[in-house]
Image (cartoon, rainbow, N blue to C red; front, side, top):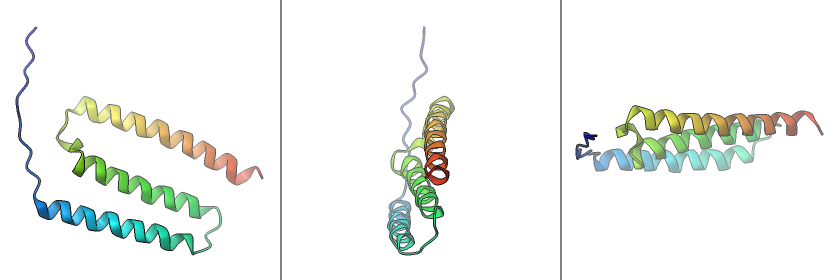
Length: 98
């Protein structure tokens, strides 16, 4: 069996890293600011949404997931979808059964 394994180089500019880092810092500030606003049960949902956006940025840019094979990206998506379902079910249980 012959595996076709090319040694590809992926160049991401320093400007992209700086912009993503600034976005991550901004999202962290927004998350901290939201904790001071009373949104009721939506405070946790908003914080989790911002955390999901931050994790997508880290996965695609810093961990170079966008340069990986399609199958690997699908596996990562399924893992995150499973995690999102568990967090969503936990959030629903916590919000409505008190």
